[in-house]
Image (cartoon, rainbow, N blue to C red; front, side, top):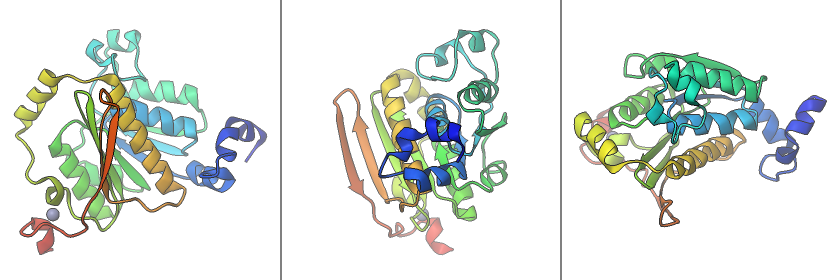
Length: 249
Ligand SMILES: [Zn+2]
């Protein structure tokens, strides 16, 4: 580690949970973020500032005015120019930490594309807003034996579910997903508090960092509500649900 890194990461180096060895592991790590909206912006900024060596961003949208209340990497100029989110994010993240390799992929994330997009990652973070993409992340990560971390926000509440290797599939946990149209409608009508997005993203980024420096991921569900200032953890079973398609394999 050079002198600049010693200065840049001095608060990490002093931290019992990270230290010089943990920092070296972060700098050697490769993390993929599926989605570059509210969750992805905050995850990316935390991970890049933390010194994670390589971050891949996947998103096919452009920045819009309605994104700015919660998507912390973007500004009015990005919205005026309708810049692809991954491009605007990559510019900003490179200014924050030029040593981090940002791999911006302006593409959709679905069952066809995800296997190649998650390949080579140490861990994958969910920054999407729909069940169909999460099921595709689950399938791609299970097939490639890559752990991933579910994160979701509704109004003022949030869910974080680390997905360690060997845990049952996402359908085992949550059953069949809602219809995509109902899901999108619910997001619009219920709204989103930006601080709920930031807390969920921070928990996902922290879980990822713990994993990257050598801790096992816990199979648990963290449910929070920022307006109530409440958070609880529920341990999850490692038993697949009877009758789930994943058991047959
Ligand atoms: Zn299953």
